[in-house]
Image (cartoon, rainbow, N blue to C red; front, side, top):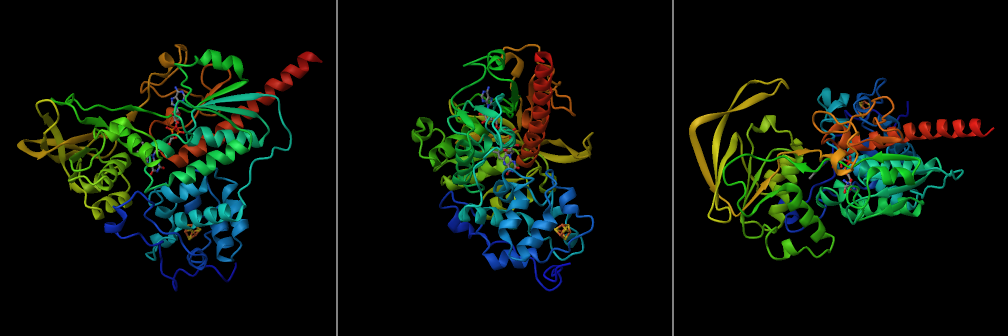
Length: 480
Ligand SMILES: Cc1cc2nc3c(=O)[nH]c(=O)nc-3n(C[C@H](O)[C@H](O)[C@H](O)COP(=O)(O)OP(=O)(O)OC[C@H]3O[C@@H](n4cnc5c(N)ncnc54)[C@H](O)[C@@H]3O)c2cc1C
Ligand code: SF4
């Protein structure tokens, strides 16, 4: 064992410092500073190099965390990067926005023994950003070019990770996306203060320079059917994510200035990227000077409240029907929002939106937690007669996402979906019921995490490769 390791008793856990809340709400920049090199090495040396590394076991990508921590502690950063990127297509993204408290860091044995977790995410981000600075992140140069082409629908993390893996094997890859930029929710969902857009654009450009073709502003369903796309390619991957916003069924929901979360976030992200956004520019989707109410308790709701704060809203309140302990959003994000001035109204659920034409106030029921439901979480119950109200100029609904109706949209009624509308696949082969068509990411799992989308993208690439190899062998046998 390297004598550089096992320093967790003598060296305290340190995370990169966070910019002060007052300063950070004045802009949309990332709120965490970067480790400096000796700090990253020092923090990596706290790892106890467990025989059974629970950090790795609980990472969806099974990243070889203890080994790249050791390499970092020894100052061998290029090797650390090569190892970390061998299992992860976007380590800099995971380092920034994975909920490490629920995955690797939440399962670190040092955390369990009361010494504070190894700061895995911050070190992962540091290693990869250093790799980019030093030019260690290279374009993909396949050993040989293959003639088969793969069409990927969706340039989110699942589609991009699959494209990277397939290109490495030499396939000709085209990604179709209905947005004007690649990245999926990394570009138009997640705000800059969690993940700077330049980081996503840098990745997409690398893939473009590696020979992956991007066809933007191309919506399957509008510009082509699935069948037409199938005719152009030897295999198809559907990686379209989930975008149908869940609705709330209360009186007044159709009043003006009540919007779904993605509409609000996309406008803000586009504005940050320098685009013209008429609905933002005319004030409709801009929270400035408004009393904003966000409904929901997940990560998307946290992104909305923190965006509204940065747009200089007059007040920002978040209504959530359970309590703080039972919030689905990451505890880290709730803390960040609280520091930035968001008011949380726990155990509250909207009863009615009031206004003549535009929303003017929200009446909400006070809730209590009842018996645990089938998911094991205590179900919220209305306390009869206990209502309160808040003034509102802008209401943002963030109640989760469902899949769009893909078979109808793609003019492929035979494509099998689950009762939730997610695409059904054979879990071993990741094939849909249509020959040559695969699916991965949120459109299979339902709304999930970036790290799972990357995992699915990498797994499906292996399956597509296997499918195309077998097809090639069959063609060669028939021709012989
Ligand atoms: C606001 C928000 C914040 C989040 N924050 C986090 C976080 O902090 N950490 C985390 O791990 N996860 C987070 N997530 C979840 C994470 O972003 C998703 O799990 C992940 O992006 C899913 O990847 P995907 O590739 O399956 O889909 P997506 O990222 O949704 O990409 C799908 C792509 O398909 C394209 N597309 C869809 N339909 C069509 C069509 N018909 N034709 C052509 N193209 C199409 C879309 O334009 C999009 O580019 C967040 C999600 C949201 C909404
Ligand atoms: S669980 Fe913690 S201490 Fe153990 S190998 Fe992983 S990072 Fe190191």
